[in-house]
Image 1: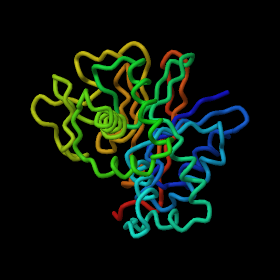
Image 2: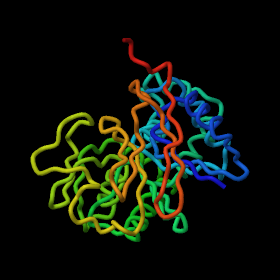
Image 3: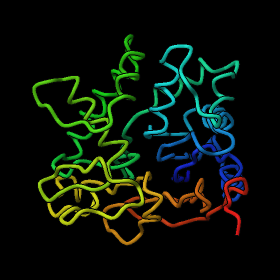
Image 4: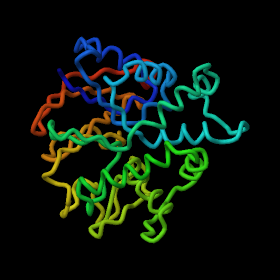
Length: 278
C-alpha cells in the first residue's frame, strides 16, 4: 500500500488524473490524501468532486477555505450568486449527493502509525495534536449536523474571527478559520487574517509553522496546502507544504508519504487550461 498526498487541486482534474496514472494508483490498496481546496477557479470542479467521491475510502480529503465557500453557496438561498467556475456544480443532477459527501469531509486527518497529520492551511502554535483533533471534531459536528446550512452561511460571512473562549459558536468559527485560512501569526500566537496570499508579512509576523513555540512539534509531521505564493515547503523538518499553484499557472504536486514523517516528491503536472500566456 502506498499513501500519496496531492496539493490544492482547485478544479484541475486533468493534471490530477495524469498524476494518478503516473503512479498506477490502485484504489484497492493505495490511498490519496488531498490537502483541501478541491474546487474553485479551475476548469472542472465538478469532475474533481465526482472523481474523489468515486474513490471512496481510497481518498482522504480535508476541507479547505474554497470547499467551505462552496458549502456556503449550497446552503444559501436559491438566488445566491455562484461564480462561473462552479456553475456546473450548481446545475449537476448529483449536486445534493456531492454536497453530502463534501460536508462529511474532515478538517484534520491524522495517521498515527504513519506519523503524518493533514490540514489545509495551518495549526495554532498553542495547540497540541490532541487539542487539534478535538477542535476539528467540534467544527465537523456542526458541518454534519441538522443546522449545517445556517452554520455554513455564517462561516462564509465571517472574514476576520477572533477567539472568544466563552462563546462556543465563535470559538468554532475561529478554529475553522485556523484550519482553512491560517498563514502568518505573531510571536504571541495571533493570526494576521488580513494579509493577502502574496503579500509580505508585517514585521514580527512569521508563517504559522515557524513560530518559536509549537506545541504540536515532534508529535506529527504536518502536510498542508493553501499557500501558492509560498510554493512548496520542503525545507522544514516538521511540515510539508504542497501547494505549487496549479490553478495560477504552476503545477499540481504529488508526494508519497512514508512512515516516520519521511516523504518523496513523485511528480508535478501543469493544468494546460490554467497556464498563463508567455
